[in-house]
Image 1 (cartoon, rainbow, N blue to C red):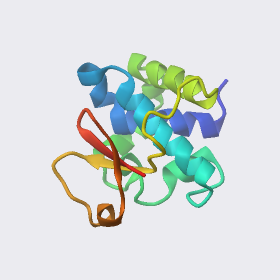
Image 2: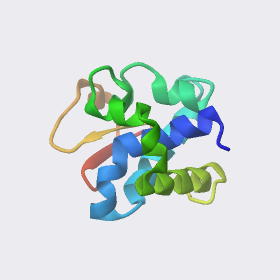
Image 3: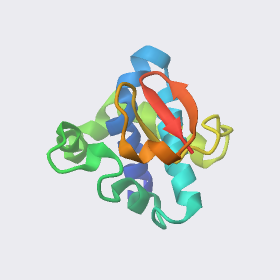
Image 4: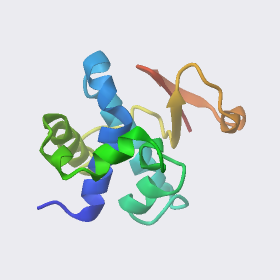
Length: 134
């Protein structure tokens, strides 16, 4: 049985990066998972994985009105094969079996947009449809 904290972590990967699987395999899931892990270790984004993932307006899949939110709240999602991939990736990340190839990224966004918060940040990785910053 998975803890609530772990479930939220895996659901966040599902909500944020499952669309990358067909394009770049599990690298997109890993990168988002590393951002969450980096935020947890930074200490100023929350004290638990759930707090980091559900901090308001940080990961869009948890935002009210986001179409992914309904999927994350649907118990059937836990049976989805793609969600199982997300749990496998989450386990691997939390066991530190993947080096941080995002180079310490704590933020990311979709390519093609330029959020205001990027102006004082350094891009550390361009991967799939996302840009990562530390």
